[in-house]
Length: 413
Image (cartoon, rainbow, N blue to C red; front, side, top):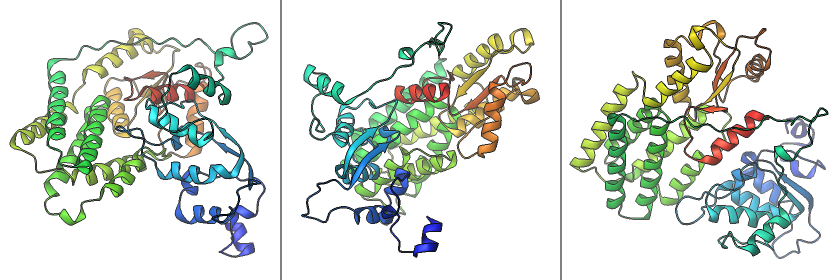
């Protein structure tokens, strides 16, 4: 782009100068790049045939599916960009390991982007007719279907899922009950669609963070409480329904830098909390109890972490001696990763470069060094564990099963 602008001027349209282009959807959805692309398309009223482009290859296509929260699929800027451009490609190829996010509205809207002659958003799924149409346009490749190695062994080891049961103590059960009660009270008092939407987002986010770790929960709860205390002073700053929707859509985007994802979540929680009504005395008490628990819980092991450490001592460091087994520990939030790292260090599971961390935003060279160390023979590299963004052993299930499956797939790759 820089070189093209040097040669042709700053107003050059990059979409007209190359026969093949690779771009990020988050770049394409911006106002100027999308406007320049539209300039290459037929004018309003002009026939779209013959189509202007040959083929659209969309990787990680599930990221362009509309959000499935609530009853209806809500289109994001990514969705709108693909919906605008896709009719002008003769062929379309959508690549994804997780096409279905659990919401039929969202799934059918994604299929409509791919082929609007066979599919329409909101059509019932699961029927024989729907399955027949789906098989017409979908090619599914499983690892088990690949040809075996020359000696007859499978290319990939068989995936075996073994859940670790965790017995929650009463205090942890109480905090989950408190959050459920707070959710019920807030949902009942929501006065309009905007507040209901804001309430749904904030409370689901708190629930996900609580399932992740006390540290992650404490950060988001603190942000929510702070926003509630300043909401009265910032009445003019309250976002409209549309603005809030766009901010919440940002949370679902794929971020290469974890801090950017954390910032997007905090901004959305802050904006959504401004739409909340003043808390009642009962709600204030619940917030106070949850905050007190989170501050205390950060300094000690919760039930899930105790079970994880027991497993690590049994398989990675049995009898106090390091084994040749290796493990990848998945954490959904950077705050949880940092908290868990401190705990593992206190349990003497990090000495001698035995544990390395991967996260969004680290240098590519450092990431490659860690991957190489993990894949090297145990006799040459002492790395048995990587807490990072991908998982062979989840500390506990992520909030959505597709996220867990995607993490596993990326790890295998």
